[in-house]
Length: 231
Image (cartoon, helix red, strand yellow):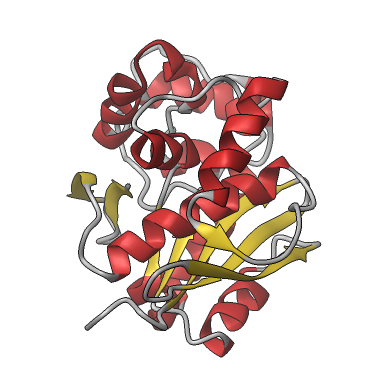
């Protein structure tokens, strides 16, 4: 199936909700249909938006597939791919760690399951979107069939041929906007950096939908979810 007309979504977690880029492929250029901000971590609303848009793929900057006893091999591969910028990839702890009711319990459980290795507060802070997506993919067949994990840093690197400066710096933000401007037509500047990342995830989602993506990893977790990153 050709790419012209294909709709995909790119999704990045933001404080308390989702940043979304809805993108439609064209024959020469790809059009950004709209920026969407969902104010809550409501995966039902997120995947309803994708279904209503006729999305062929939903690229999520959220881990899909959680390990049992070790770090995910795909996260280690992503760190290697980013080289000196490897800190931009978080190591995803096992599902049992993320399911803990508080950070203290999670730290103890992490040391038990991961043979003494610890859990950062920053990683613990990501558990909301991770568990929301994990639960949705366990119960929503459409979401499971269309959602793929992406990583905006890997997407931008593949898009431009180089790992970009930090998005927290003016040169990094400018480089990301320039990269997207070379690919997308559409509305004015996004509401924030999270939407820039969402657009990069849409770039990888479109490559997945059209069979041109590069895939890191692929081992399945205990629920049968592939632990992979689509670039």
